[in-house]
Amino acid sequence: MSISDSGQQSGWKDYPAEIWDERKPIDWLDDWPFWEWCAASYAHQTPVLELACGNGRITRQLALAGYTVAAVDINPHFLSRAVEHLRELPNDVRARAEFYLQDMVELELGQQFGLALMADWAFPALLTQPDQLNFLRRLADHLISGGYFAFDTIFPTVRQLGLTPCKSDNGLEWVGTERTFDPIRQIETRLSADQVMRYRHTSLSEITLLTEMTGFEIVECFGGTDKRPLRGVPGDDLTLVLRKKTHD
Ligand SMILES: C[S@@+](CC[C@H](N)C(=O)[O-])C[C@H]1O[C@@H](n2cnc3c(N)ncnc32)[C@H](O)[C@@H]1O
Image (tube, rainbow, N blue to C red; front, side, top):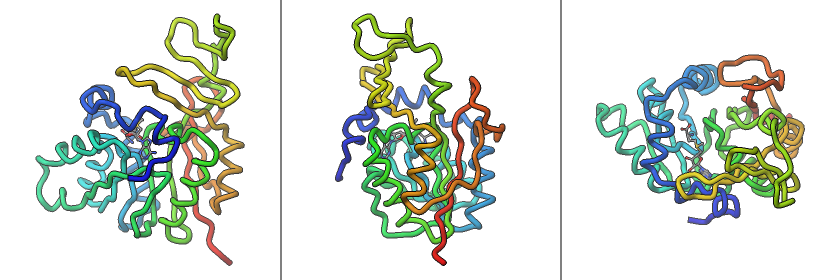
């Protein structure tokens, strides 16, 4: 598997599956109504591309709802869990989900979709603008003209509340936590399950520019998967639907 700098450094590739299963259990479905709404509104009964599927909690729901899903993740242990989580389902439901071990920056499925979705803050795993651009370009190749991409991600200024200078004089920190923030690279670092995890904070204006550079437009912008209006207040994240522009 070809792996980008982000794939190497985000910490996700080797994250232990049993710990992720505890953090985001397969039956944690608070955000499912949003992804269900996306599928019903944008997939038009065509196969769905699920990026960064983790332990397959949304893949499973999509398959149960009758959608055919191509689900991609960079972590082989997560994908094994995802397959296990589908095992108890009827054969016809299970057959609707295919899993692919790939880095989404290097996505190569040889197929186009009407809808791609990426649940639960996987976008911050793209740690540099070149990787974000490569990802969106690869994704555009995998979407039909007029196809959609729905995702949710960090709203930086909300996330950055409470930052103070590190005692070491090196970057910023959230005192009392093990999280630090490098304001130059826009990268938050934390330790989780003995892994150094890195998340890039990307502003709405940066995302808007990235989408324009890669042939997308923003068609929906919410403050969370509960579809609240985005106000940039605590509790908000960036929940966006992009559309691949059609050629005139
Ligand atoms: C916060 S978890 C979200 C998992 C899942 N979407 C969910 O909603 O439960 C982020 C996921 O992104 C995956 N990921 C991170 N970087 C990736 C990359 N470059 N390519 C593919 N998957 C990636 C991780 O392995 C992890 O499963």
